[in-house]
Image (spheres, rainbow, N blue to C red):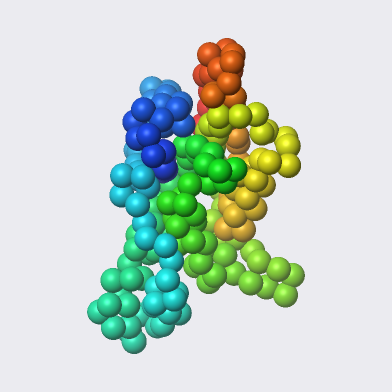
Length: 197
């Protein structure tokens, strides 16, 4: 059984283009292989921003934590377990104000944990989550791929490389708020049809 973690964060919910396109990719995977899909919708069930109290809970030994600290630490533990159990990750990634959705950033802040998903060495950080494949379906209203305004691509490459995930594949659907959007959307759909696990 192949395990897929499907992360969504569009404020437009099931009507968002990032959700629609990435859902079609997941369905494509399901039709061609025996897969188990775990979905996490960060817009529907948003994570709060990280706090000092939560950071403190992580750095406290489990047997020394208070009940409140156990509750705080459990959120990150659950998210990391979902990630560890996955073989493939599919991320629906809309662009908001040139960046990633804040709910997605809150997720990243809880899965990038020193000593858990990466460790520091004398030669720099080393990721601990290997042999995983990541697909990012990136939707944008304008045209940003390959320009200085595309802060998403570099950020996602950096943060996932930090935790050991380096097989990262992007499919872009851009210019969706511009003339010719239908053609660009069709092109993105064609690109997705060529993707395989």
